[in-house]
Amino acid sequence: MAEQASRQQRTDERRRRILDAARERADADGWAAVTTRHLADTIGYTQPVLYSHFPGGKAKIMLAVALEGFVELTRLCRAALGRKRGRRAIEAVAVAYLDFANEHPAVYEAMFQLPIEARFAHEDTDADLRAGFAVLAETIGDDGDGTATELFWGALHGISLLERAGRMRPEHRARRVTELAARFAAPPSR
Amino acid sequence: MAEQASRQQRTDERRRRILDAARERADADGWAAVTTRHLADTIGYTQPVLYSHFPGGKAKIMLAVALEGFVELTRLCRAALGRKRGRRAIEAVAVAYLDFANEHPAVYEAMFQLPIEARFAHEDTDADLRAGFAVLAETIGDDGDGTATELFWGALHGISLLERAGRMRPEHRARRVTELAARFAAPPSR
DNA sequence: TAGCTTTTCTAGCGTCGCTAGATCTGAAGG
DNA sequence: CCTTCAGATCTAGCGACGCTAGAAAAGCTA
Image (cartoon, rainbow over all chains, first blue to last red):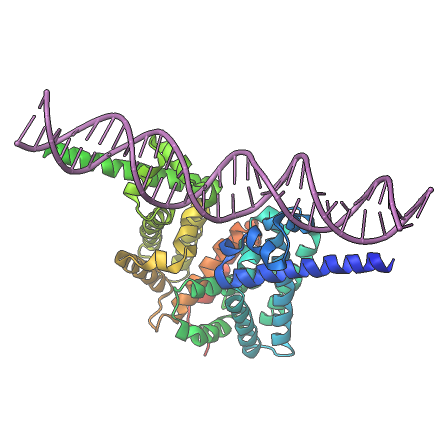
């Protein structure tokens, strides 16, 4: 009994170590640098052990990292929003969102650029995504059909990627956030 | 002399065939499916021949495809803009932009998601990019410091990626374009 | 035709993700 | 305490990847 519990515990801990190692390495050097051999070395086991934790291999490891990313990003945005409304809300959430994407580029990449089938098959994923979408909708006060939120999300997503790709002047980040808040604070003129 | 010209011609044509094969295969099955062995088979030569055309290997082939993509996307947006102004201009350009990203996903990916160094070392690249940026600025009538254009571009970029990733309802594409036009047609309230 | 240059191929290196089958380990039963 | 046996772990290897050195072939010049 106690032995079984301890075994389960060690299994869980090792799974945790795999995910942490993958995330850390990926954020530092990109997903291409995350190899099964390196991961196995890091956790002190051989390659096949990884496949007992993640039968789907590297793709499932990336998926697991992405799932945790959705939860974390939603939490950060929710915290940034707090009870704010209007422009201050948009600016706070935008900064939180862009900061996360900047600090965890590989996690963000796994969240949004993995092949679809792999990413959204899991039933929990949709719930996590809906929660994130809801925070963004609340941020801009979207009471419509969600189109404005989609646009807002798209802008955040695009800006974060283009910033990291070096296509936008980093020193203008604050201006973009201000501009974003100005354009999404109120419904557009029809 | 005539021999040299013909040789150059054959070299150019083979280069063309490599790029076409890479682009076609990538748009169909993703860049991972574009292997040097497959490319060599397709053009009827062996692997090392690719490296006489593109000493940098696969990365440089992707870069070449990306460079042509910048030119093409700018041309398409320019054509869509024509003499239109205001909302009609924004809607037309947005549709052209999103259509391109949809029809040539791998080209678009190469354009915006390759490692920076590889992508923007070439001096022509910046000129092409500036031309594209100028079209977008003209589309929304940006006479400021370019921040609004960066935002507009970011929105287009983000929407195109999220649409392809299956994160936005495809049937709402038109609504997003309308919403985009409404929010970017006029300067925001300050 | 002979010699030289350029083009093209053969063969192979090291690395990748992944897996079958052997080996080891540790708990349960005699 | 020893044996048994299942699960955990490792060894070894497969096929595919990007890429390259050096041999062979082809084409130009004299």
